[in-house]
Image (cartoon, rainbow, N blue to C red; front, top):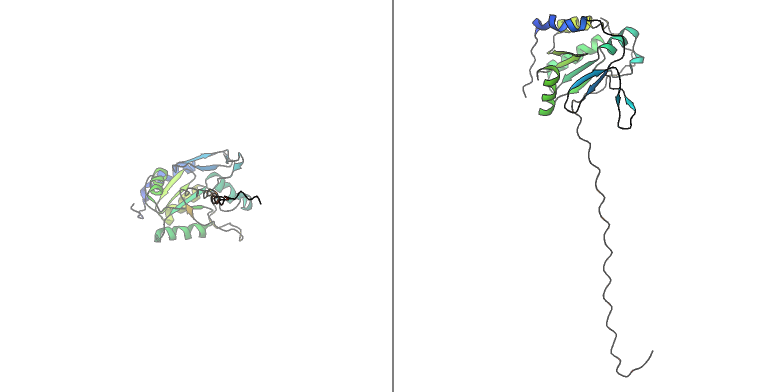
Amino acid sequence: MRLTHRVRPHHLLLALAPLLAVLPCQAQFKVVGPDGKVTYTDRPAEGAAGRPVNVGNTAAPEAALPYELRQAASRYPVTYYTTAKCTPCDAGRNWLRTRGIPFAEKSISTREESDALARTVGATELPAMTIGTQPVRGFGAEQWNALFDAAGYPRASQLPRSYKYAAATPLIAPPAAEPPQASAPEAPPAAAPAAPAPANPAGIKF
């Protein structure tokens, strides 16, 4: 898996086009399938117990965000893809936090995750990001500023001081560990065979 940083400024105009479209003002939910495919819907996913599961990308409840930022995060949720020991990834993360962009961070460390990333953003270069459904590859402050401006994110951070970014999580969740199987109860030891009755040739009764 080759992880490199490559900025493509000539893609800027193409990247801005989807974000300039007017979208309905309603909450969006991001759903990541087992194969890493990302889809967006206006209805929350159903949990295992049939309860709605909020799969949005912000690391804190959207209700805690100021109105302008909440609207942008609802329309264009951000997912940031990184890997360990990646200087451009660190620079991009710091840039997002400085501008006050709420985002969910997904780490890439396996071939399976790299393949899922390629299906999502079209390449395995890191860092990468999705703003709504728009994939963004590589870190470039000028390009990112233009994209977030077009998406309606405030230029200056409006995050509350109490806001905390969630730690990065694997792009593909590891399989749940199977519970240990209970060992079969040990069989009780077999009873010792009864000793033979002593011979009693005299016929004495006790």
